[in-house]
View 1: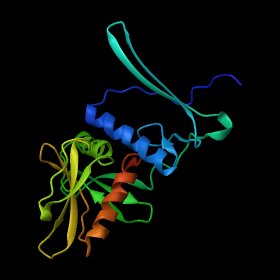
View 2 (view 1 turned 30 degrees about the vertical axis):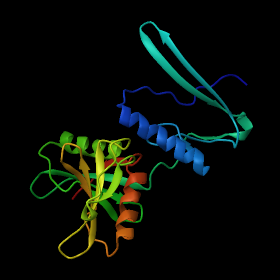
View 3 (view 1 turned 90 degrees about the vertical axis):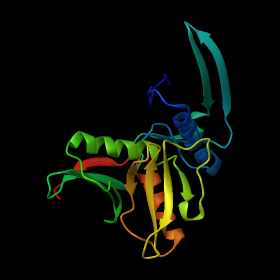
View 4 (view 1 turned 60 degrees about the horizontal axis):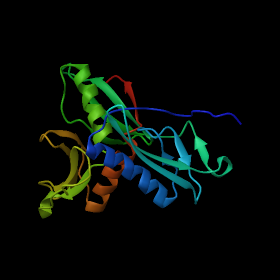
Length: 216
């Protein structure tokens, strides 16, 4: 059988971003789940229980290359080039004030996250969606009512904050390191467990969710 490149991509990442990506791979391997190859998880490989790992560190033309290569027999590793990356869709729309907003709607019809603010420019709303897609999967989760703080290592450029509102319900918000709230759940939950389930749905569904323009 001739060689076939199924997926190839290249992009710059911060150290935290790289750590987040590698943790996604490690978690999938540890659980025996399909391993996401691309950022959105639309290409996955269901790895065999045992495989070969090759690690190489070299200098070449002024650049340091650190390469980790994993190999499994073809018949023992199932590749999915059309994986169901998300069960939700980002809806981009203009509100009654002619500002652009977004919401993340699950396939069951529930809105599981929204941006919480309007944007004068559609491109800014799109950038807000991209920030959530990029930061939600690896964001640490803290309970601000218990004065918890996010660890210094790992995570992403944002943190999921759990808190109790004036009605004594649990809510969550995704706060960027610059202090901006880039997403929230839009509703209160009777228990912290339910609020965590809501934000976990955003963690898993936001990265690969398609973006569609809709009417309000």
